[in-house]
Image 1 (cartoon, one colour):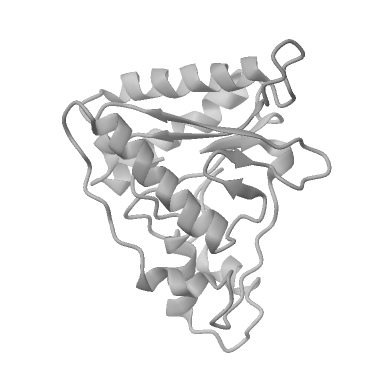
Image 2 (cartoon, rainbow, N blue to C red; image 1 turned 90 degrees about the vertical axis):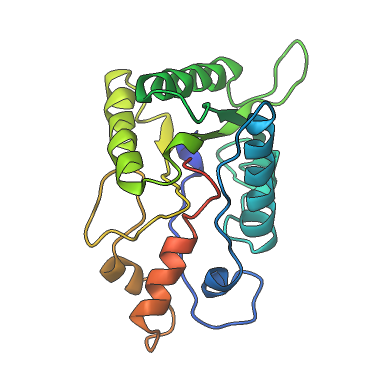
Length: 217
């Protein structure tokens, strides 16, 4: 996922249950979605991703600035609300084809801008969710591919404009800093938890399930 850098916020984790934003509840009701195939595969990938956004980012309030599966950056004072655009690489795509598809949708976002179009009044784009189901079963391979993206943004002088976030259906919390776009390590997450008695397993599950989208994204 990619979004305007102005929308990045520091997460705070709560161990108490029963609240709308209780991230620990995620590990009990999130199922891994098989990668679809066939003519309608792209539509199915986008549909499952939108459902994930609605269920977790919106209804469970994991991202208070995502108001629907179609709009993000809502309520930010220094960044206008904008559209979320979705992209899909075919499950049989080569890594190079996936990268080119990702770059194409980045260009689409940059061309749209983050404000309303002066001619059409259409809202700009605030976030991208680009899915690559060909990587769904191999988290290590996805991490290797994902590691190329920060270098590409740096080469294009876009690191001050865009941020990256790594998602995968089998996401594993890193033991230490794993690079731009990855979840914090367990020790770092524990420093944000409001309940000092939270179990490491709960904190780890919370961090991992926040990054377990139905598809490599």
